[in-house]
Image (tube, rainbow, N blue to C red; front, side, top):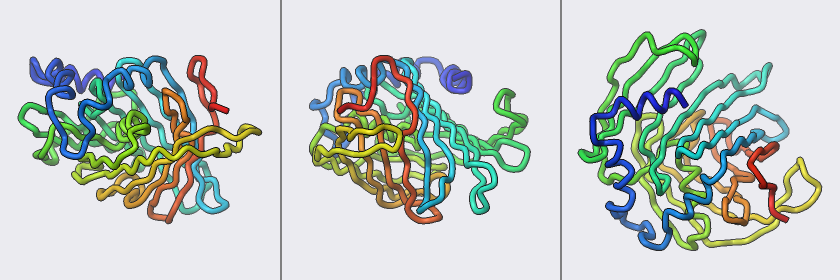
Amino acid sequence: MRIIRRIVHALPPGLTLGFLLLGSLVSLPGFPSGKLPPSEADLILADEEDLTYEVSWTVFKLGTIRLKTFRSHAAEAYIDSYDNIPFVNLHSVHYTWMDSLLFSRGSRALELRGDEWWGLDYIYDIPNRIIRVEETYQKDLGTAPHSRVQKDSIRLADARFVDGLSIAYLARRLVHAMQTVQVPTILYGKVGITTFNLPGNRVSEALSVIDRPVKAIEVSGTTSVEGIFGMTGDFRGWFSDDSVAVPLKGKIRVLLGNVNIELIQWNRKGWNPPE
């Protein structure tokens, strides 16, 4: 959270308020403008969340993803492989700050490389549709970077887009839309398109940590840019069939092939997977 606040406070005067307004002022081709009011995002972010997922490949359990959400429209993700996995050694942290419609308005990604954390800071200038990408190095997550170099400057075709973490929150808001939506996406300094296919299919899904089926809505799609550990291409996801649309399970393609992601622990006031 401290890192996100530093990004926001570093923005030029006047841009912070502008970010909050742009979600309602800019129209994205293919996006169902006017049909999904901000109140849906308000429901998703009404209570703080702490969700833990286990990642597996075939019979191997690879690690966990811990996803923390805050009422301030900020989120953090901690991705850690299990110890002694011979073909995976991954530790990364992702931060995002979103507007009232859950589009990205500030983000940062960090990855442990050797004994240092390598990072990419995304400094947003939405009115001019430019993102400045800065490469950083720091000794640990609690200290400021000791090295910061501008790596790139990205020009955007549209002011509405998602980053590697906010993409999950936009999907939660869209899950009941019953249509196909294309959203500009930024992953590891590259710009592409994520397509969500939202047919509104209601299904029953099993979670390994509970002994009853869970009511879910199925989503599929594809992304044209490459993310963490080679994530790209087709994906499928299942979200809770309720007003907060918590991600329950997912299948994504990475360097190893298809991996499964499944919710194993949750802490949200008054919420349990719906029966």
